[in-house]
Length: 409
Image (tube, rainbow, N blue to C red; front, side, top):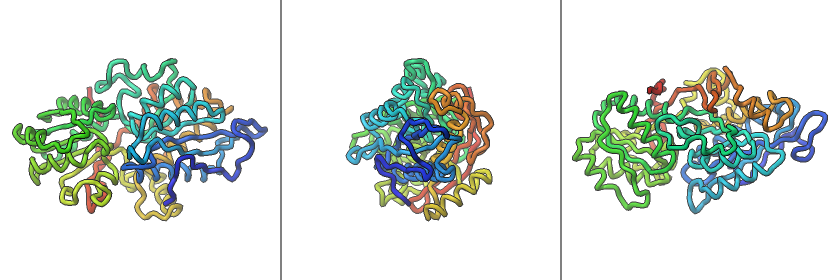
């Protein structure tokens, strides 16, 4: 699989002219992506980038009359091993200041989009996230914080869209899954970040609605050496399952070790899409011990290739042929669809201006895609609602089932 590096560019075969130039055939425009290409999410983001490249290649580097260049940016650092506010801010500013910018694909992490959305909104740059789920980026639904989402759009101009369902849906899916598995009392921790704390609040609401008891919702210190005292507290409260709401980089592996030791080998251990990655599930990559594989389940908005419509299954065949990977990471299809939607919106915009592209994005209705048929609503959210539940087998995510959870309340 090709590795996309910071500043990696794909020049289309039909490229030509200077960035932002308008020719008789159309403009030369740039689609940027901003993703953490280093650290625990590297496998997923490489798949996203390669999916986007494949979509652009199949389109011949064109969107209607316009010629499209793709530039992949990295919002992580080797030292942090994850995204950083400084890197995401720099990427958003680069896109905002480039006259040829048409669409910004990103971010991967909801906290990173909290940084980039205000910059891009002020510059009028249309944005498509292939992975964000935090509720407050688009709505003031339960789980959001005061002032959200308006504080991310200082000019009032909504420019942000996403093609994965928000956490209201994921929380309902997680609670549905835990109930299905027989959990009766669940201990929860969160990593205090935008995504983790927000998702935990929505899980609390969904558990109440679905009749599942949570014994705790503890905000953890990500720098702690261990979580044995929290785990013992959960045991004393009678918890028979554990769920962590946060990302791998915030000491997720240590928490799962400590709660598994306290609650026993029959306890179910659950996590959201923030840990649905190689860096969490693979022991050789620093993830959970193999002995915990059978206890762990995670949810993520990606499904098994055979769960997608025929167009989606065809995509995975083409991706396998192109990159020579026998088992493509599920995020590949989101990179592909993010680029396809970007190209479609650019074409529908007519003149290729950012304002018209943004209007086209928000006017997306009943789009037939590799993910299924969906629309973008007035908040920028997708109407898709399916979540995938995955177990862990031999250090890899293994698809378990599709959960058609509906958000309540």
